[in-house]
Amino acid sequence: MEREIDGEILTIPQHVAIILDGNGRWAKKRMMPRSYGHKAGAQTVEDVCEFAGELGIRYLTVYAFSTENWKRSTEEVSFIMNLLRNHLKNSLERAAKNNMQIRVIGDKSALDKDIIDVITDLEEKTRGNTRLTFTIALNYGGRDEIRRAVQHIVRDAEDGKIVAEDISENTIASYLDTHDMPDPDLLIRTSGEQRISNYLLWQIAYSEFYFTPVLWPDFGKEDLIDAIKYYNSRDRRFGGVK
Ligand code: FPP
Image (cartoon, rainbow, N blue to C red; front, top):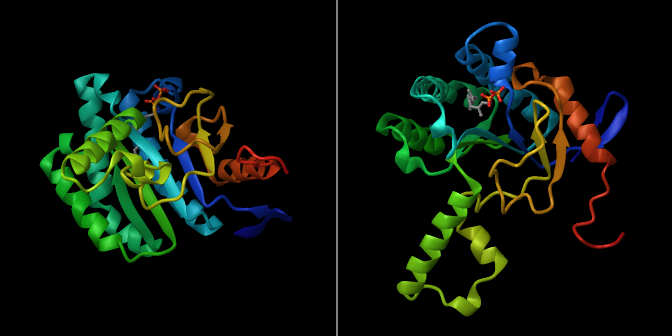
């Protein structure tokens, strides 16, 4: 899809994935506790969903909690889980307003029962929304996702549903949490870090990467547009020659 933005015709990436980073540093700069940064970060997620929809992005996938984030203090983990719980519980109205589907990827089995229930309900009730698919990666790790997919493939093989010779790249993709989504065109990481941190390892094979020093709570519409401008300056060849 193309859009005129600031007098320029820009191709809008279909799927934007974001590693939101820098909540803690943002709070520290203000001499506030890390929780203050997470609260501001959650608000930014909600704002970015709106901008993304307005700009014509079809899929937005954010890394909210990784399989490694359990290593943080119990206090911080429970604060983040509560933020996510409240965010999810208040999402139905926003989803309707933004015509947004909501999904969660990751290993949901480790989450509290009430969070799992609200996710199931949200996914079901927003399934018909068509403008933006907003996906939250929660208790997500790229390697863990592949591990779970392999487990599922082996089980299907044991049940005679699949034979080894027939396993193609598409077969593997179809067993991932993202099976019904296109791969990300653009991956953004905020706060100046330049790492993948176990995010969407299979899916980012051909994504463009955009790193910005902006701390996540400060990330706004102009920053998203800058990322899209950068994406437009890249020449995507998918391993071929143009
Ligand atoms: C990133 O900053 C923080 C996280 C990855 C965990 C918490 C995420 C949120 C609160 C966003 C909520 C998401 C939704 C969907 C509402 P950091 O703590 O790693 O910052 P630092 O690197 O500066 O310490």
